[in-house]
Image (cartoon, rainbow, N blue to C red):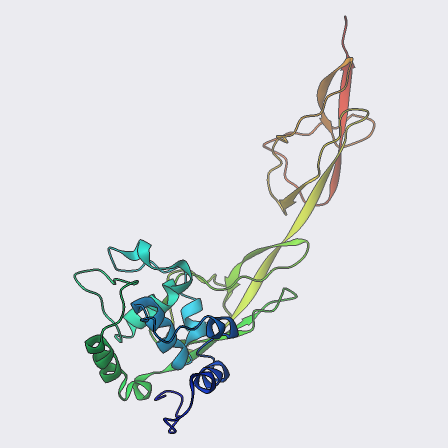
Length: 266
């Protein structure tokens, strides 16, 4: 009620849950499964508080963080970013190097938590990281708290290309861990993909493979067979004059490789 700014204490549970959904504190699915008599675990409390502070996007960027707790493996996978963020913000702490994520929050812990929250918003500085996808799928922008350290940013995708990371205005790649200290604009870098198609010349068919521009061409793991013949290598041309130098040649365009065969003697 405190976070939802609801003054009428006579509101029923359904109305409270409806307000919680409107304020993005609960999803509809969570509200449908809501059990008012079930204690909230410490990790779930972390989720609720981070959502109430409108920092869910920040928590989502921290899902790959390494938590500083001996029982980190016990934190549900989808709550790792929330536990990491609420710890770094100093709102919740562990016990003897453990977080005890599945333990119910006590009244005393709740009192400490709300004490920590008093005036907390006034101390936060937010920065926006904007992503320019350069024809890739939309990532948009995320808002993070100053001093937040993240181990990854969302990746964009683009048909026919491999994502090669985010780069700043100076064309320097963003490295991780990355600590937020100002507004930034990062640009997606793409490496074009090329396809190798195999013309087996009567042999068993082989699946095409995709490599990044300038990758070294390595021998395919899939093999082709032709009854009565012995496989004698791959060539760039149908006339079988220019052989492929595997582990040396590099791909710079889509290519077709042609199989050569030698008749076997019974």
